[in-house]
Length: 126
Image 1: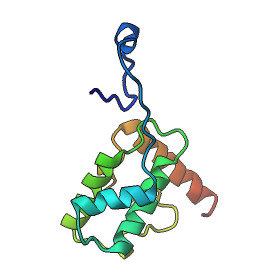
Image 2: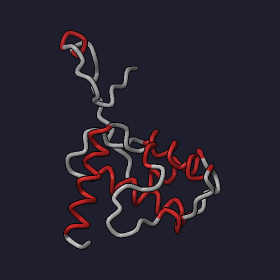
Image 3: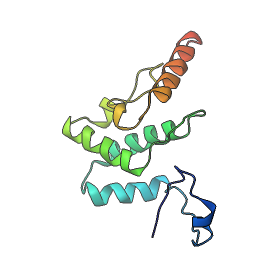
Image 4: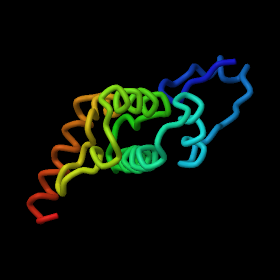
């Protein structure tokens, strides 16, 4: 079994010998269940806020590398290590990236994109 996460083009000769099966990205409920397996007893308000911000980032137009389930789990691990609450995660107006965003946003282009979005939001008075 080989997984690619659609990150690299595989050679045609190789693909001809493969059976392709697409698995769509999990919805919020499924991701919540995955998180529960890794972090049993996680406070539901923290989970809800984390998932909300995670999906906001994933849905940002122009993002080069959308955060995956692995990044979500790593981010939640950091949130727990820092003992952050759902209230701690709520962002002030104009702030586009969540606390400890380095676990979610993995390249300089995407960080720059969020900085531009935050600048534009401040200019428009959001």
